[in-house]
Length: 330
Length: 274
Image 1 (cartoon, rainbow over the protein chains, first blue to last red):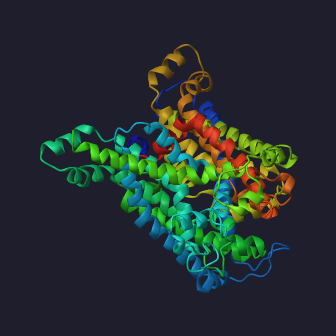
Image 2: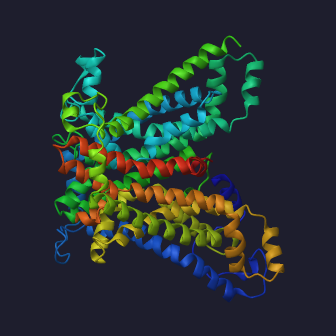
């Protein structure tokens, strides 16, 4: 879909500013004139632009403004502190821990969730009986609210709860841990919950990608003497590349902003062992009324995501979806 | 044929495993709602014996559950109507008008794809506080609509773009204005894409947690996700009721999903595929 947009866009001159409308270039050179067209454009685009600018772009800009003040949210902004909030965050131990936790989740997703999703998608791509039902079931956790999923797993993971008794009943009692109370384990427990919640999305995405690959290619590979593994490795996986790259993008952005599951299950604890950038942000910015400082953290989180998105678009996604992003950034 | 069979049975085994891991936690909660707290404490992973309906009837007769449900529905409907209404107008302008700066405006909207609401939640909270919109359902619905605009426009624009120019020319020959063409012809032709973006905007709002968590402090304003976590924290000693509450709160999302699965899956995979 995006590719189509990109190609159609390439034919048009890319204007830098939204200047006056040139009626002459209108595709259907209609007579009612440019005034009417301009009016229609204002009517059609105005409300959406207003909403988008007002509630997506302005808040992020305003955060940048607040971030150079020491502000508890009451009274006017008076204590200008320059970049102190940024320095404090970036050199603070807890925030650095939070960044590390986010990066661990990113790495675990790439190393564990990705191969798992690809493998499952390849297996489920066969003509299995009940595949439609399977798709439905696999996707179900993705549709549940993060909050609900978190509460479900809180119930499952209670000490002597379902997970513990199930492990004991199959003779794996030695594996039982304090899943959410042990600082060495809690992050990995949360990763399992996240995987449960999101793996279905990856599988479905990859299945859709696989179904876009013509079966003739596989057959041709087989005719050329490629085994099943070779055909998969050298034909299917490269063709699945664009889908995998999109999955990686979504997964990294999601992991960097991880909030709900952590907040509800552990509040970032015990002893900050599962803090993420987003829980740190809400903890300081919202719970402790450190609005100036919280805004600085929000800006940092925003910049990290933005830089990643930009670099990834430029170097990895470029071939697949020459999106508007790359052009906008030059 | 023979080399295929063992691999297929491996696939079935994997399928059963996935289904088990996916479904068992959900079923555990639903079935747990039919037990008493004493039963759950005595044997956490056993079946109900006897099955009791008390927990479910307690939740269903509590005004809070219905209030949360109503709040969620109101916010989701407002957010969806705003996002789809304004988004389709913008997508129409961006797909069937030629004007300078068109790609820049489109690029601006696609920026929104990169940031789920989470990044901006604290700044949004401060903005809403300034506007006096805390504890107000619109304070949640309007930003959610704004954040849903990106995906709405990214899905709708190519769809509207692909409707042949001849259709528009025929309408113009019949004396229809451009806006009349949009309203009477283009929108009805875009129903498949409109359904997809409607479902996406609705589900996103329905499941949202972070912004409602910041905006709503009084429990009478809570949405269902907030209600579930609040209930869980409040009734720690009454596990069975938490099970029932959680199970009931899953139902709308799961039911909606079963009805609209094709649209959700199609929308998500279609919108991110190249």
